[in-house]
Amino acid sequence: MTKTMIPAWIDGQLQPVEKLAAHQRGLRHKAVSVFVMAGSALLIQQRARTKYHTPSLWANTCCTHPDWAETDAACAHRRLDEELGIKGLELQHRGRVEYHADVGGGLTEHEQVEVFVAESPPDLSLSPNADEVMDTRWINLEELRAEIAVTPQKFTPWLRIYMDQHSALIFGDAI
Picture 1 (cartoon, rainbow, N blue to C red):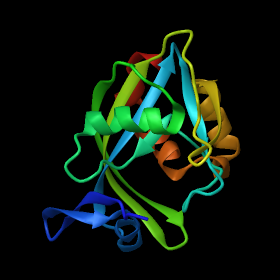
Picture 2: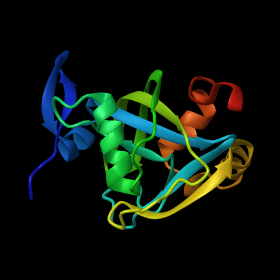
Picture 3: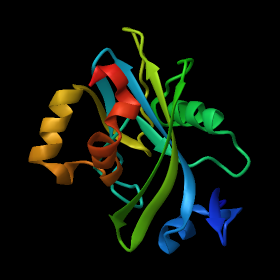
């Protein structure tokens, strides 16, 4: 199996680092998060049980790390297709956020995330990859906030951070 090399900062320089090593060392690294909306409803995914961190937790539509030398937008489109079978959505770049999160097992996400949002057509077809995604659902943003408040342990640390600290950037008028 080929190791995935992602862009991470070491001594102030962006360098290719194996993905698992970046999480083990807590290195700041590049990431992409996508939020697919249908009006005020967000498409969220439940991560597969086989994921090496945060298995079975609910997350935003898609989140990943660009490969070394891959553009952020190309990465977002690639992973929407690879994880959910979604093609052809127009992505709007909403900005950049940075966060730290303990994701268990001695792993840390220290991500510099490029955030993208897409508006879904009513007939959006999904084909989730079982190696990546256990389930999907649409949820109103206020209902999502309420669920996170009651059962935060069911959601990934980054989705909780996005909803708590970055929702105005991500969702704008939809909140």
